Image 1 (cartoon, rainbow, N blue to C red):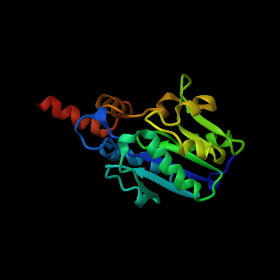
Image 2: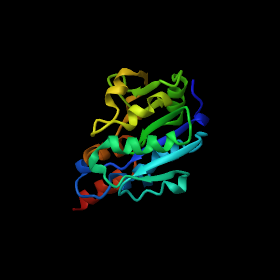
Image 3: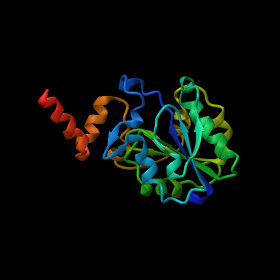
Image 4: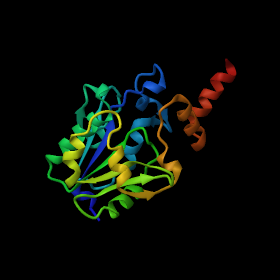
Length: 207
């Protein structure tokens, strides 16, 4: 087990949103009364991490207001690995035992699940990822012994291969929904009965 107090939360929020069309950043899209990209920040705000780091791009989400140190990724075209390296490098300077890496486009992640990941992390070489029962995915915990490897990654695959080789903690598929397309956002809104879904439906019926 690794305590939250010995970790930095690294929130990756610098995605290019290419599959969402011309909407700016998907993280600014409304979902349940707040920007999509702020949900995981709010869900984890009571966890006693030593520090919270948000690696941001063009989204307007105010992570600083939720206690995050802001690290800007000015070249998101280098892929997810660039954001991950920036966040881990910042965490490494704090001398922590591990990082918890979460994605800002996964708005249904809970603190309960993050605690389960930390409970399964047993040493500095730990890699503990989430799973929907079919495939491993973020959020994930990486022990300090993995920091150099994470910082050295390149491209858009991020830590995919490392995650596959680690431990996996299963949770419900609904908790691990990520949003990459307008259709996925609408399905998520309808799944939870978000008022934004009904607002859009009303506009379409009027049109």
